[in-house]
Image 1 (tube, rainbow, N blue to C red):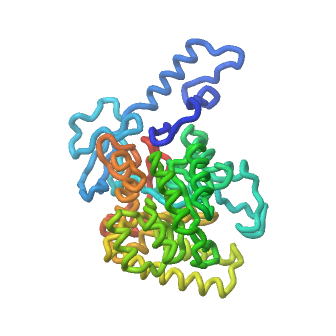
Image 2: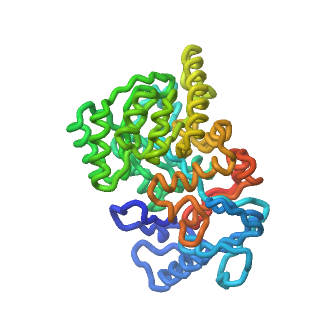
Amino acid sequence: MTRRTALTPSPQPIRQPFLSRDRKGVGQPRPQAITSSCLLLVCLATFASAAPKALLFGKLWDGAGKVTNNAIVVVDGGRITQVSTSKSGIPRNAEWIDLRRFSALPGLIDAHTHITYYWEPKLGKTPLSQKIHPAAKVHLAAENARLTLSSGVTTIRNLHAAADTDIAVRDLIDHGFFPGPRLFTAGQGLSAKTPADMEALVKQRIKAGHPWIKIFASKGGFDSVDTEQTVPFEAMQAAVEAAHAVGHKVAIHSYGPSGVRDAARAGADSIEHGIDIDDETLRLMAQRKIYWVPTIDHNRYYMDARHEYGFTDEAMANLRQYVEKNLETARRAVKAGVKLVMGSDAVYTMFGQNTRELEWFVKAGLTPEEALHTATTNAAAMLGVPEQLGRIAPGTFADIIAVEGEPWKDIQAVTERVRWVMKDGEVVFRR
């Protein structure tokens, strides 16, 4: 069972479903009575499965920039307890896992997803034509969660989901009902025009239990690349102030430069998308340490999946032009010292491609190792958990991936050759 982390509050005790599951060596208890011997066997089986793990890797990149050859990582109770090159001090009862063919990295963070967007062709000819009940979206999100893990992403920030379905998905994963990444949620995005309305909506999202607030400050999405700003500066500022007053953070969506400018002025914690950002705004973002999540790759995805969506030739031309401008803006942002964070903007059939944004970052001027930081240390700092995620070090969560090759030199080693994934000390994917 996946253990619940301390990053999100638990609304109820974690269920213990093991009594109804078949386990080797543990018989099924009779419904009318569970004997003490059966309980003892269950406890012993649970204890045995919780033994420490000693992982052997050919190379290890720790997230802080250090590469270690022939590394051993000890994992116990969902946390990393030891990183070394010596077998001394390894617990005697540790389970040894030989991954010396591979390089180890911290579990990656995708800072912009839509986990509840799932396309079921039976319910609609295109992803945008289907009608799915919120409860069904939560159920179908399990496949998106599985594919996300397969890409090496063990944590996501989900920006926009109706009816708090993202919280439902988060809790089902945390309680072990199906495997998936750790979720930081934002609920439904806000687009109120007045400061008072925006402040009221922010309070609603916070009361619902979301650590992040998402604001739609412009048009733009799917086949539309409209950059028109739709939320005034004053409303953005009111939202940021209301959220920051109680320790919550704000992500602001803007396809165009004016919305990005006002988002930076308002003090957003992260800005999503954006093209043609002026140099003054880039300097302000760097100065204020505002993270930028450009999501360059999601429009590439729309072009590749055009037949699923039924996009027109005109839409394709607009998407291609936006990608080019997005990339050019990213090049200028890198030179200006803006902190970039990997975000896929994954929807529908894009899950499993979550990390392809890293290849665009290399094209924008980052080294492969700098690109890795956007999905590890940069992202963890943006989320406010730099001591728990984004690194392989004693005390951090045991989120570790194994890849073929050396991604700090060749980024495609991580975008194309993930072979094994651990989250919270449990193996959740192996190829």
